[in-house]
Length: 292
Image (tube, rainbow, N blue to C red):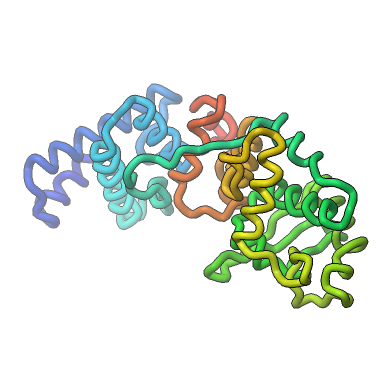
C-alpha cells in the first residue's frame, strides 16, 4: 500500500489530499476484509468487492463517496496487476453509480404461479402460456423474445440461445414448465398461426397474422393478463425479468450464475437485485468464496 501511495505521488503527481483519500479508502476496505475473515487486500475477489459496495450502499453513503472509493480501489488493483501481484481486478466489473438505483419491482412467487395459470386452452391461450412461461423461466429481455427464432430453440436438450439488440448471445436452460409450454405451442398451434410449416429462420412468437410479435404486442398481452391478477399497472416485460432474478436469489442462487443467465455486464445490476432479497452479505461470502 505504501508503495502504491508513493507511486501515485511521484509518478502520477496526485495532490496530497487525493493521496490521503486513497490511503483512507484502502485502509477502510482492508479493515472490512479482516473483520469478515482475516483476508488481506491481495486475497480478495469479485464477490468481496460486490459485498463491500452493497454494504456501502446500505450504510447510506452518498453516491459520490461510493464512486470515489470504488475508483480508488480499482486504481490500486490495477497497480497490483501491473506489478504482477494479482491477475484480476476484483472491482473491474463494478461501474460508477449513476443517479438513483432503479427500483426493482417483482411478482411474488404466488402471483407468478397465478399468472401462469391464466391462459386458456385455445390457440391464443397456448401461445400466451408459452410466452409467459418463457419470459419468466429464462429472464429474457423483451428484445430477445421478439428476436427468438426456431434455430435458437432446442427442446430436446432444453436450452435456448438468446440474442440481444447488439446480436450478442448467451445460452440459457429451459425449465420443465417453460419447455412443456413451448413444446405445446410449437407442435400443436404454431403452424396454424403461420398457415404453413415453420423453418429455422422463422420467429417463434407470432400474432394471428403469422407476423412476429412486436414489443408493443407483448406489452399488451402482459397488461391484459396482469389485470386479471390485479397487477395491470405493474405488469411489464421487465417485471417478469426482475421476478426471474429475485426468485433465483431468494432460493439460494448466486450473483455470478445470475449474471451469466441474464447477460448483464455491470455487477451493480446484481447488487440491486440482491438488495431486495432476504439474502445477507454473509450468505454471499459463504456461497461465492471457497474459504468463507
